[in-house]
Length: 133
Image 1: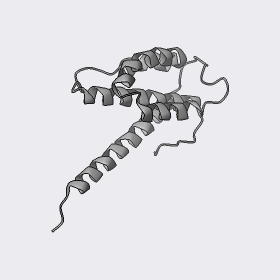
Image 2: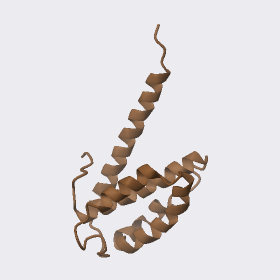
Image 3: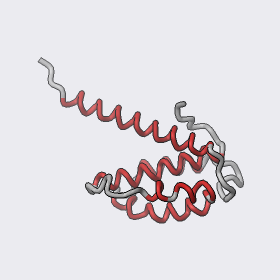
Image 4: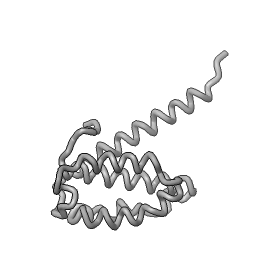
């Protein structure tokens, strides 16, 4: 299933936020050559996030600050987080009730969108480096 950027289901949106947090941190770790050295905060907090998404997101947000700073504010990721947060319906964001497994669909769809973008960017770099005879 492709990413649905218009979907407003609370659980789906929280899953997308978790994916963006993980990607932001992984990108910062990659840029400092620390990729693969440890589990991201998003992955580590996944179980707590499923049970109490609102309060866990607040904790995760605080843990992302140093990584955002490493990425000079992480403008793209911040814009994406803002876009996702704008899709929450009144009362859904601050509702701290557990998430249904639907959050995994949002998480997975957002991850796939990142992978697709990364692959396309990699192909563009390869095309730019190709020489024609």
